[in-house]
Length: 173
Image (cartoon, rainbow, N blue to C red; front, side, top):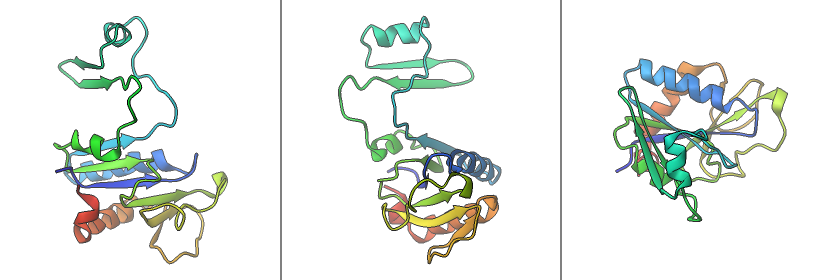
């Protein structure tokens, strides 16, 4: 079974990453073991050329694990396989109490939409993308969904906890 998860989605520069970081800090302060998943739209590399782990991947290893006394990381090369779904990633995070998911706009999981007046560049996600159950914004909105000020981290965290409790089937796989 996957841990409870809740998403944050929005257009570029809408405050997603800032909100995720602040929610992670809030939930951690509340005593939860929090994991985070971020969807990247482009190729990315967390490894550096010349490092042993990079050389292992370049040599053809599908998965490489780097382990130290402070952390460990698993890198998986897809080598032409399809991008894993959110459920596949969540299954690897079974030791967490809560997973905050950034991005994955098209996923059916529940999520809060971020909106910033300064970066408004597209239509609202709510009503056009699945799973939007609330809005966090820095300007007044007229919407039937619950909405919060982007800075109301405690209120947003309370909403997420309440949503997970009242809709467990939507938040746990």
